[in-house]
Amino acid sequence: MDFRDWTILKVLYEQKNITKTATLMHISQPALTKRLQQIEQNFGVQIVHRGRRGVHFTPQGEYLVKCADEMLNKLQDINDHISNMDDKVTGTLRIGSSFLFSRIKLPILLKLFKDKYPDVEFHVVTGWSEQIYQVLVKQDVHIGLIRGDYKWSGGKRLLLHESLLLVSKKEIKMEDLPKLPRIDYKSDTKLKEMISSLHNIYYRNQLTKLYLLSHYISILKLVRQNRKFI
Image 1 (cartoon, one colour):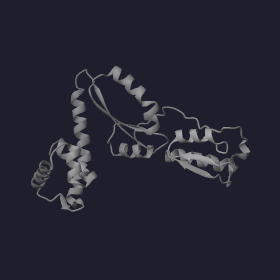
Image 2 (cartoon, helix red, strand yellow):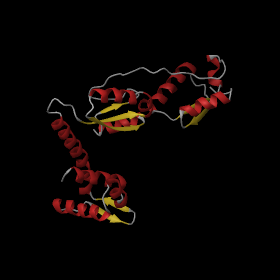
Image 3 (cartoon, rainbow, N blue to C red):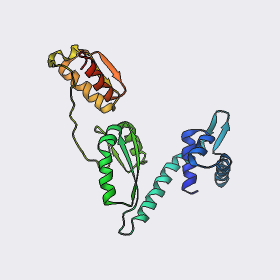
Image 4 (cartoon, rainbow, N blue to C red):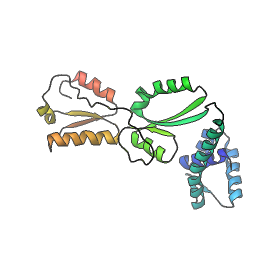
């Protein structure tokens, strides 16, 4: 079993489809099928059942997929360690970053890092903070850049503070805030919990009519066009 074999198992488990897996792995379907058969012969067990709706992993196959994550991380660590045994810093830095941080802060940081270590490559995964936390727990990334305080037994550091801003097209009184409709956008769970907690502390059970949008830029546009929203 080499790096490619473990990767095939992981991708196939995620896709549950031979054709999609072959496309993602840049190999032909017959070659992928033959490789799966060789893996099954090596272990002497059946890994997957093939059907019209895709493939289904056997218990033995499920176990090998769990091992795949560990083996891929171990192999990557070995490659990185060997590459860095001399004075030259090389290898691939796997980073998980929240959407907003990756859009605003991360590009500048990556450029500065690349200027200092030109032989280091980056693999960046973006998502909501809770998603990045999960890939960090699974050790799919080396570091995670997330919003909020998550339980973590390893090292963690506060990078920056964020200000929560109230945006309104016209001047408003804070005591009138619960009476005004509020526009919200899809964001990290931790941020939503914090905003809801602050609202409950200051305004108790007074409800605010909520409009949900997909992106914060949409909110700014809507506020500019309508005086009734905050």
